[in-house]
Length: 143
Image (tube, rainbow, N blue to C red; front, side, top):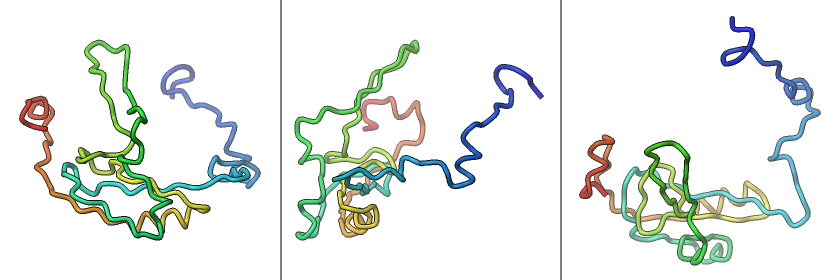
């Protein structure tokens, strides 16, 4: 067993209070006016989004990419040699490119309500071929 550095055991300071119910998790924090969110995610690795159907009673609680016009994408940068800067939109627009990609954001007073709203949103896809090889993915015709 390594005594110091990488691979050394570290004394965990937070476990005791969490195990005894005295700790606080981010999910436990409730502030006045705070709302919860749940996301509709892609079940497919690569697909065109043909339609997103939001039940009328939830239209004010569900946000899609078109509702976020002007919101800048998340930009990935790194000092690593050869790293290619990339941008990821907050919510998928027209296409999904990975399983789990965010499609819609559902906001409600509680997490359970937000999840119920997300379950009511329907998305129609046109499945596209998924590329599972990094070298093939670099080709211009793979997108």
